[in-house]
Length: 400
Ligand code: ADP
Ligand code: MG
Ligand code: MG
Ligand code: MG
Image (cartoon, rainbow, N blue to C red; front, side):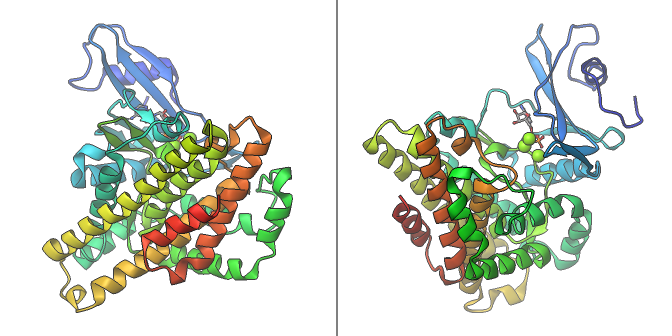
């Protein structure tokens, strides 16, 4: 079974049975493939006699997008498992434990989180997660600080950069987030009802300049080891617990890209409340919860990041008077820009979000799409002037 091939459910059981200290040698095991099958197989293996279970995630050598397959490196399974292990060393409670990584099979064996729900689903159902802002603020502060030149010796950091060159997955981001949505590309899925607003995006030179600058940062700024795909579909959650999964897009990039991914997906849900909330009062209330979560996340992140910097900064020059404030202001501005870019691509780009697309009331869906596009483009255009997280919340509130 060692040469690479996509595992069958029977082979996944056979593999799991041989893992040390997990299952009893003779007991019955049950396997279910629970992934969406576009990029990866995800097997849930359980032992009914003990209730023990495990997840096997296996990369497929191709991606299925727009009905076609294109080859996609299996090395992303290594990237994902190594990123998870680094994240676990920094915030052990906020990622699944990795038991084994099997390079020949592009296979990661990890903790089963089936007692959590995917946050996108939870928000669509109207649930609130009071501990999330604290958890994700700490996740961002620790993973970004300790993998950057602020918290890691520069030579060690460069070794890390080498291990996390991720050209094929970065190319997906470069095209689908920073290029296609701004032109009439065949990769877009333009909702016919908002063709006018999308046409305005394609013709907006001021917007394109800001996107080109953000794209340049994504291409060239090796600031910290990013998760790279930190949307609410990559977050498992309960009232008590938050677990970040699926870092196969991990690479050394600009910190604001990860923070912006979280904010963008909260704001896509904010826009989608056009259809999910029963009435105006509950809509206003849930939106205030979402923007409050953004505020708390940023404030928790900033407080913890500055604390780590003061207590554990490794670079003498980074203690230069005024430098920390300059750095945090630039980071906030990047966050505004990447939040906007992550929103726009989800409105009329290739891959969209269930928050908006599963709305059945077509008028509400159209309003949600227009709100998301308006917030996204405004944040992109404003990004280099941003000075406070409150401005991001004002921009969102003004769009509804
Ligand atoms: P992909 O990269 O293909 O998006 P994900 O890592 O996001 O793969 O996993 C796809 C789905 O598989 C998740 O949405 C979740 O339903 C399930 N899954 C993934 N990891 C786990 C886990 N550790 N525990 C339970 N379910 C998981
Ligand atoms: Mg998927
Ligand atoms: Mg995923
Ligand atoms: Mg993934």
